[in-house]
Amino acid sequence: CPFETIKVNLQANPNLEGSASACYRMLVKEGGHMSLYRGFEAQAYRNCLWNGMYFGIIGHFPPPEGADKKTTLLHKFSAGTMGSMMGTVANTPFDVAKSRMQFGSGKACIPTIMDIYAEGGAKALYKGLGPRLVRLGPGGGIMIVA
Image (cartoon, rainbow, N blue to C red):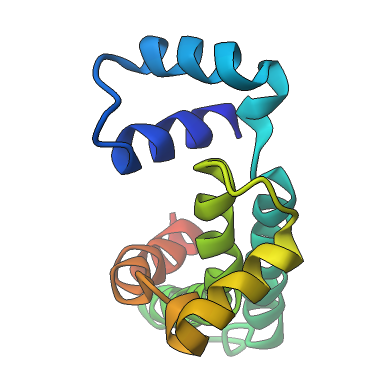
């Protein structure tokens, strides 16, 4: 989580100049070492949802028995892609909350999600879903085949 927190702060703070180590020093100076773990709760929810969906779907759709290698690989890739995409749709609100928390919202996960919803509705909770699906969908398929 510390690397994610540093990354989010470097991306979202236009006034922050310098390297990741400069960002690290600034975060620790302003909030102590625990500030590096902001967003951990949302990240845990995000990861649990994604893993549950991904592995649940893969386990629910095993390759057909007796299928040749090409068919088996295609089936695994398809199931992995579907599982990854569904996991990504399920966990995106927590990813959005994680980023907001890491940038210093100062609130816990569920209150942060409620704030985001109050500010922009359900659409705001799915900000960045398209690029995440493009990256994580096929990535889940490749991961299960490799």
